[in-house]
Amino acid sequence: MESLLSLSFDNISSRDGTKIRKGLRQIEGLLAQVCLSKASSRSPHKRKSSALDGGGRQQGSAKALGELKQDPAFREFFRLQEGFQWNVASRLLSTLECLMGMGNPSDTDLLILAALELLQGVLLLHPPSKCLFSRESYMNLLLDLLDSSNPPKLQSQTLLVLVACLLDCPRNTRTFEAIDGLLTVTSLFKSRSTTKDVKMRSLEFLYFYLMPEAPVAPQISASAPNTAVLQRGQHKYLNAIPGHARTHSGDSMDIDDEDLDTRTQEDKQDLLGQYLSNVDELVADLQESGPFNTAVTA
Image (cartoon, rainbow, N blue to C red; front, side):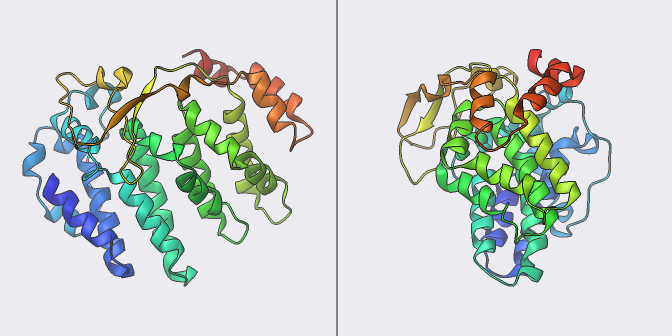
């Protein structure tokens, strides 16, 4: 698996659009092998590179969530993500930064969209990678993609990535608030130039934002500013993987209690009320919605 990741990282680190596209497809192929049942019986160290080189989509049915944590390929992928060298989320963020600075939107927009879709998937497969977004630079990267000059598909997908990186991460939410994330999203929602689909996606995000936050255990974050901030101490993730082996990249690690700084629904209602006049109605809808109540109490 390391060799496959190395190959894809080399490609997405290029400034050549063709190589970046190939690298993104290679990562997609690897994630498909991890998540689809067809590959469940094969060793993660013996994957065929042809499945990644061709960029073709994998065939097979998705594994159930309960099966993933028992799968050797998923466990190996999860283990590798805990080190800086093989962390996919950090590499995708670097690629996004590069693509956004390359110009020629007609050539790069599809690559940005593909990178965002992969980033969303990686954050769901390896939740500790979400702590990368406690950094203002990475959160700002997502907010920049919500600019009105970007295509609606990019805006919609960025909002989905925002949900993934804020889910169960109060510290990330505080970063989002601190850099005027609420102003960015509400401005997008209220703009006349915003398409109907993006408005709906923005509204869904605001419903998500207003959900109560549950306190979480302290996280472990890297103190070195130039290394990936990867949480290795979140028991709720490690306990889900029997026999999980921790990796050590040599980073200096410190316990970080900032994630205990949660806000109540009323607190967030007041914050959002600075930008929207009908927040009370949103909260009432949220409290009456069965699916949202289920998500809050789960």
